[in-house]
Amino acid sequence: MKKPLIVIAGPTACGKTKISIELAKKTGGEIISADSMQVYKYMDIGTAKVTKKEMDDIPHYMIDELYPDEKFNVVVFKEKAVSYINDIYLRNKLPIIAGGTGFYINALVNDNIFMSTNENEELRKNLYSEAELFGVEYLHNKLKKIDPDAAASIHPNNIKRVARAIEFYILTNQRISEHNKIEKNRVSPYNTALFVLNMERGELYKRIDLRVDIMIENGLLKEVENLINMGYDKNLVSMQGLGYKEFIPVLNGEKNLEDAVYELKKSTRHFAKRQLTWFKAQKNAIWVNDVDKRDIDDILNEILNHCGRIFNGAIL
RNA sequence: GCCCAGAUAGCUCAGUUGGUAGAGCAGAGGACUGAAAAUCCUCGUGUCCUUGGUUCGAUUCCGAGUCUGGGCA
Image 1 (cartoon, rainbow, N blue to C red):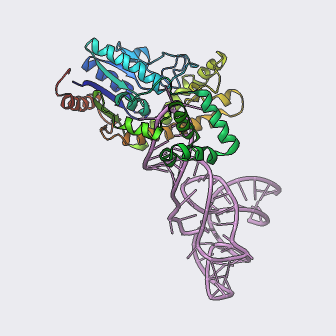
Image 2 (image 1 turned 180 degrees about the vertical axis):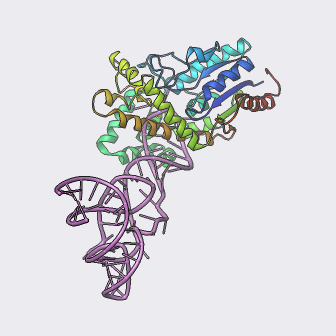
Image 3 (image 1 turned 30 degrees about the vertical axis):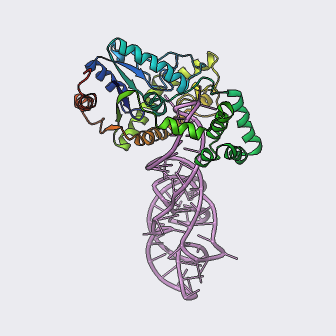
């Protein structure tokens, strides 16, 4: 029998944190964050990380688990998340995934398989430099020869993905297009209730702008400075996070604060839109709308009603 | 009051040697299977300020007006 799994997803700044915690209280749930940046220690303000106080004694996982120079990606996420989920089931509790990283959520929910041997960073870097030296078309043509389907679906300018497809073939002797096809048809081991929190676009953007202003007031710049002072390099994946990459040039005097704030608001808006695009493509998603205008109990009731139906009364 | 420069897409502006116009940004849509808060793709009709004149034809040239900058009084 499939185990129940609740996912609270949605664009940044839509209120996932609060709702997931309230939901956990009502269901005896424990929260696993599906967020590519909140895993990192010392990155609190810029990631709008849940505070201890907000957690309100609800157990949270995948928060503050890594140092900013540690490797984190879907594979690491999935591995850790699965072990937390299993542990939560053993204790007869309900796992609630909360976060905005749709890619991670899918990998977890669909149980996509990733093998530890399927990666070679050096090889990938070499491919990047090939693209730089001979052009993106050169690299794309290379892919076309080994995996025409993948080449057809990946734009030549998207070097990261072109390179990964080539890397995948070299390492596994299998085409990534075929691998993806198989993974897409995988049957989920979970009985998942996937909720996407949403609100009117203009309202979301207002909240994003406001949240950035608050981050500045709360000392985001100082946080970035501390990270740099601790020796974390600006090229680290963690430092590509929103709020970090925009402010490093400010510290170096290469950009003024006002411009950086404008940039951060803008890229956060773009990000929210990309998240929404991702979730729109999830056929099983249940959209919870106007989350900003509604009472929290009203929202929780809607979520719980769906859960009751999906889980058929089990666990709840 | 006078002089100069502007007035074109939501914003900043380019341009049309006179044949009704295009970039960046904003915005919208999309893709995504090991960097995903990343990476990438697609989408631009607007009284070209108003009004006379010249012209087959004016947003473009000329005149007047209005507004906005800047300068001089």
